[in-house]
Image (cartoon, rainbow, N blue to C red; front, side, top):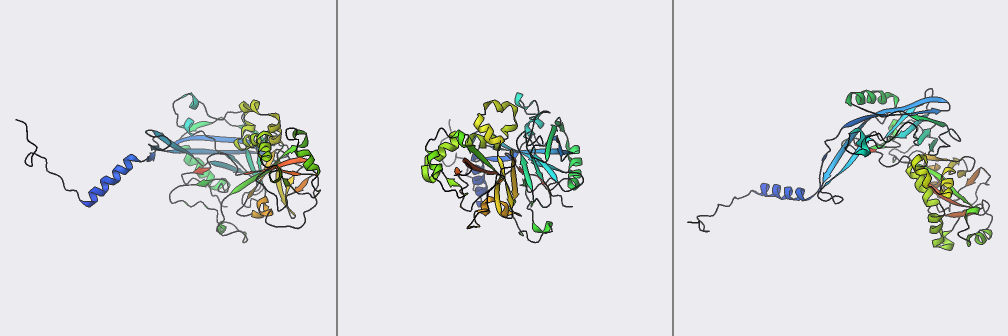
Length: 408
């Protein structure tokens, strides 16, 4: 005979304490949200080394890199699946040039999935091979960072208009924790400070560059860590045929050595010049490092390629910031925490009544220059676009406290 649904046959209800009820409610929330954990495929390790010459002196930029990873379940980007984040520790490596304070730096490649031996053809080989090129950053003094240059073209990495000659990437190899620890021990005393170009995001780790670590009293006590690289892309009048309205307007401009923005006069023409005049493509080629990748050179338009490989660095002297017409194919950089006056952004705030006289080698940037768009200078007969971004591409954050802050 079946049991009847009455008070005698029902299971007794359990009385939950307030703490238990709260815990169960929290568990329900967590189960419905993304759950983040360490990726079990990590840590993994690989050795990365780049040979260069700095003013003729051989230098090897070398480090054993530790790869770490996290993964999250059921994120908005991948509902019902795993998504992850991989970190290279450190994300930038450097070497001091023997006999002085010069230093050179390269970005750690995106090689962690290869090092962790992911499944699939994409991860069978390391991402960089001997014969490849990578951008190199140079400074005259790794402690003061008074001069910084960033070489992103083959001509600049051949020692033309630069201090660096690129030699080769050594074959990349997977390695282990023992090699990593030995590498860290060397880096603690031999590596330049990496923090102006990368940062650590690890619990309990403070990676700011502070004034107490330096000797110059006129630096800010708690500067922001940010390095900006700048160059000018210049389109000559011979490539203006698509926009016939520009030529008569330029002819009517005053000979005042100033940049005149296109947008304020022609509106959407400025956007069209940026998009179809080669500037947009050139900017992408530069910021992605594609200028150095052999497999992508065929897709470049000639105008964009020429804009990129002939980019002119911005320099600084006692009169202000200027476009350096003498040098091409590289960017100059400023560690703004210590040298904000060398940025053309700050030059715009000086409100000078008169500009220094321009020459073939120096085109000074006026205080009213609009860096956000296309501008024309009549005497130069060219359209200018200032490109500004932080050096190195992609991930420049580490999530472990590796050796990055060497102070001799």
